[in-house]
Image 1: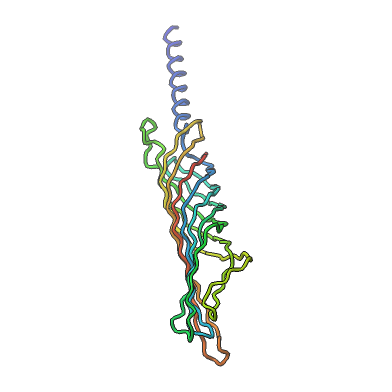
Image 2: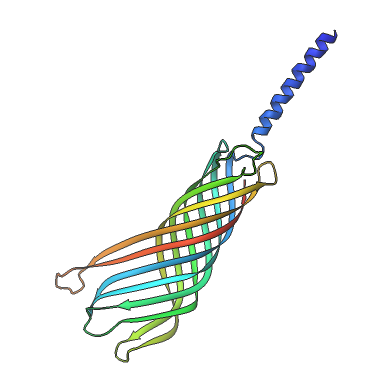
Length: 251
């Protein structure tokens, strides 16, 4: 009789061990639904360069904005086997910085070169795209467990607001108007990221990450500027370089 009881106890303990082992596989891992809420700060540099034809000749205009941004980003997607997560992201940012504008027209009949630099300007950023994260360390006992690397691609629009300036060629001075105008910087971007997470629940973690974003885009247009069949090609190019520090809450 005692042999039967002992056999039943062994079978029960074995089944319980399998259940615990199965649960441990999903404890503090990224599997299934993926959600990450990110808050951060970034130093950004965005530039636009416009080559266009005017009645005075070819004119080059360069506008740059540098400043500090705070931003919120939401990522939503799925995780696979605690090795990788793929997601779509959407974010908004706001910051203050310095806008600088330079105008050159070497072939013009009169001097129209000018430049100005002004602080206290603002930037509203909208960004979205898709990305992925990879978790190379699988041993939960390792101090490096939670280390991740990420790459993402998408689109950024920076809407920079600054005080209007006008170069008066006759008086050779820059006139400042009270009107605030905006300039849009549009970039296709790639973002690289590295970070570390610390788990505080079965499926939730907090983390910190460093990221670098680079982007560019070029737009061309052909105009019959003179109205006599002589066409000119205008070109506007954009660039973006951003360094960010992010704190995140992830499921």
